[in-house]
Length: 237
Image (cartoon, rainbow, N blue to C red):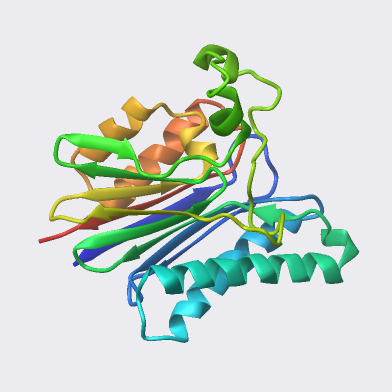
């Protein structure tokens, strides 16, 4: 059995929330997206992408990586089509991270820089790798982490839902054992709250709701320049 809870906050600077998430335990599916684009296009993109993925799983009894890939490709097509048909939405896109609980394993797919983390016994690690300029260009060039944190290209993504017909989706799998916890987060959380603090909250006592609220509070205490979203999963006995 998997418990889940999610929470999203507009943050301290933005006036609208372009993050969107869905928890669908009956499908074993948990999805988070962080939209981008003017005139509320980011909000449209993130919601459309997430709902497209969820709908794809409602239409089939299959629960595997191929269904997940096709669902995300469909989300990409739907966001591109909406932008094509409405000039006001031109340039809109969204990150997306989706986790499929198959029982003994989590199948995880990601586009962009929204992340999935796993706490499993003594181990806490990011499962996903950002599709971003920092991760794919800056670090390979040897630019130090302190410089990357203030680099003018630090927010540039190399891939996003809606940006291109040639979508690259990163896939991962992880063992899902009793007591393990998974965190899905938008960069409004992991971009301002350090890895050590994330782990500290996950290891603390309390409900998933309590932990999600702590994540939001920590991001807001750090200034929360972006929307903040956390979805927490825990494998119960």
